[in-house]
Amino acid sequence: MLEIIGISKTFNAGTVNEKRAIVDLNLTLKDGDFVTVIGGNGAGKSTMLNAIAGVWPVDTGKILIDGRDVTKLSEHQRAKFLGRVFQDPMNGTAATMGIEENLALALRRGKRRTLGPGIRNDERETYRRMLSRLGLGLETRLTSKVGLLSGGQRQALTLLMATLVGPKLLLLDEHTAALDPKTAKKVLELTDEIIGEQGLTALMVTHNMKDAIQYGNRLIMMHEGRIIYDVEGEEKKGLSVEDLLKKFGEASGEEFANDRMMLAN
Amino acid sequence: MAGLLNALPGAAAQGLIWGIMAIGVYITFRVLDIADLTVDGSLGTGGAVCIMMMLGGYNVWVSMAVATLAGMCAGLVTGILHTFMGIPAILSGILTQLGLYSINLKIMGKANQAINVDKYSLLVSLRYIRGVALQKNTILVVAVLLVILIAILYWFFGTEIGCSLRATGCNDKMARAQGINTDFARVLGLMISNGLVTFSGALLSQYQGFADINMGRGAIVIGLAAVIIGEAIFGRIFHNFALRLLSVGFGAIIYYLVLQFVIWLGVDTDLLKLLSAVVVAIFLAIPTWKARYFSKPVPVKKGGEN
Image (cartoon, rainbow over the protein chains, first blue to last red):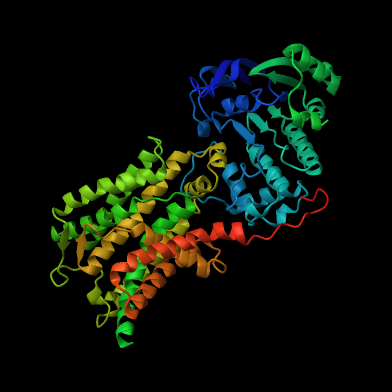
């Protein structure tokens, strides 16, 4: 499904602010893998997701999606294969456009955009049905501007948009981090549900170790731009937060340095 | 008072012509979130191309169509400077605008080219305000053109491509994540905008009977003024996109009516541009001032309400 072969990315190379964000990273995901990603501040989690999404070109290495080399494709070209949800709820939707218009944009992801109507009447029924499962009352507000919605509502909508046309890979970049605990839980459960239903392959960065253990079938831990721990199946299910902290200490020789992560547990 | 009343129809006609230009500004400034200064140059290009072609014997519609295409080319240049060459949008517009000054001079051969309303069949003219057949009346002609343009733009921004332009202006990160080529969207938006501006310039030069190298100076400010006035007066009642465009047109008319009134009051006309600049600056500052000095503290909500 996804193959990352020896990618590296250095920001501000040759300056005092030089930051080797990911270093010779390798990762292969199988079809249907739901992988949670944890790691300290600046471990390269988001950088890895951005590299896959093509936000900027990588310095070295190759990225294959479904066997197809996408390394040279631009961000909007790769969007055909990817569903993305960002940490900031403001980033995933267009605030000045209506709920249905946002969904219509997502429905056309990966397709050629023409001078045909930006939204067709028969789509609205689908949108209404999909929105009603969120249980947020959005199905009666199709034409409301997204800017009027709360962070949680926007993030749930972004999740719908990301999975509307069955992405080959779903990239979730701490997509519940900016939400209050109750809403975060709801969005996370919805995420798990949709991934399960559609059998999606997903990479989910999280700062919550409990979530990282509870959700998905595989867990990777990153540190200084490398994957330092990779565990799946039964072994992953049996982990505890203490185990993860210990693993981190063994693999990196340091204390776990992420304030948010410590507080979250 | 009679002088003022006599001047009002002319002011309305000018306002309508500038309204088309202001809709071009609206597309970049509000829809794409770019302040495009190309317009100060492309308005003159519209006038220059239109007048020179008509002097060369071409039909008025052909001349205006070519002028519009020239404006779209100007927008294309700014778009390429901004996207492909990575130059900030404002600077890209300034560069194109400066280049257009030379180009406009070359098109006209000199700084000013007049066209005689009696010898050429102009579509609009300040002579066609009073005492002409209704279908020849400039106010009506431009009003019809404005409505047709708004209808076309309303249709366009409802299409898949049009929606991708709106998404790009609103949130380009989201747009790219949804597979929209945001560079293409920006270039296309700049082309449409400048096409409208040159079309307006072509009308304006016919209206005043000449094209002038300086006719576009400060055009962006007038366009912004129209956008801001339209929003301030009609923003709360006009929510539909077509109505918003219409309110920009109204904004331009109001701008010219107020201008006429200020002239009638006896204000030194040399100061008019300064006055416009000050008024637009204040209106542009209002959102910031509102947030900084007049925002109410948000009451703290209890619980995890979403």
